[in-house]
Length: 160
Image 1 (spheres, rainbow, N blue to C red):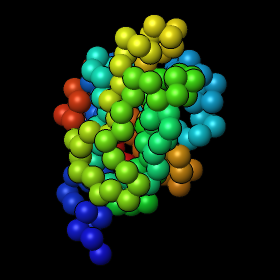
Image 2: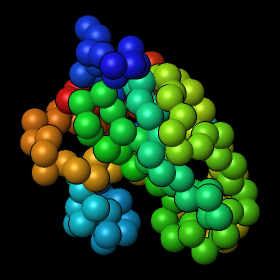
Image 3: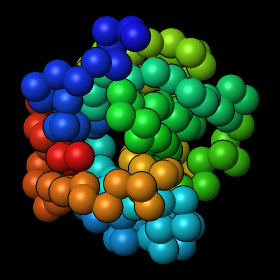
């Protein structure tokens, strides 16, 4: 088995994928996310313009054309989708860059996506960064840390 997927002492803690205010997914201004149609999770109103891996994982999906979302699979089978903005798919990748490919083994803190907040806002859209556990029905005991000001790759935002 690859060492990246072996359990380590702090593997149950997810670090902040962006800096900024952490909010419950129910407060995201999009019914698909706030109603948990895609799964449970949290979101961050970012003060930076990139998303990093919250833990060691493997990239399992990227939105190649629109560049606004990346999915990863953790050592325990948990699947997480990072989605930048609300309705940003309409930007067709403008202002976004993806730094990973499907199958990449990534480490906590590795850059996944960069985005241009100013451009997103000029389009009349929100730049909130959403983290959705797409198979959350299998992981009922996730403890999310909301209401805090997270520091990217430092603050613990969830325990799994």
